[in-house]
Image (cartoon, rainbow, N blue to C red; front, top):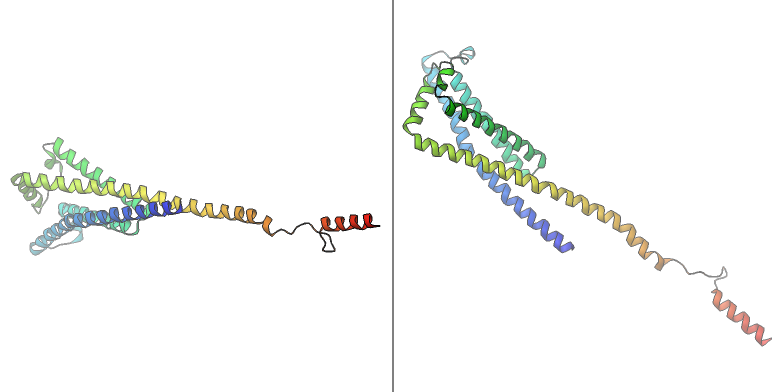
Length: 228
């Protein structure tokens, strides 16, 4: 049974390593999208700074689109970093934290996508973008609709797969710790039993205080009585 338990633990450890590697690989791939958003926002601010004075009080509401893209990219990078660290150390707490952040991000993305699909005049509800990059982005999406659809589907599929791997890895980490606890409890309980079973072999036999066995002493007394 010990060998079987060790083999099961070895198989579970190999499975956790594979899932952790896949989760880190998906986080690395998603990092390209996050860094692209950050660099895109930085380029907008850089082009704006060439022709205008860039001050902190001009960021909102004049440059709200660049700030929103920058904030989304940085938040995405932070979530991916949390997922990479959680997959590296295989910590249940970190995996749970990453799972919650990933679910919140996907819900926000679904809300934004639903808003855009259900409201044809969604762009009119947004503040005016003085940089004009929002309108350029919308025109680019319309001109390359198929490419943008496939890119969005690939991003969502990668995020969903990362969330699934994190949940599976979280479920695999918890039973492992409980198995170790049960093994320690079994060792602690088993030791007194071994001592109790081995105790009779070390107990001294009943003997006369003078060091003579009572059966031998009684037989010698009877022989002396009969001889007399």
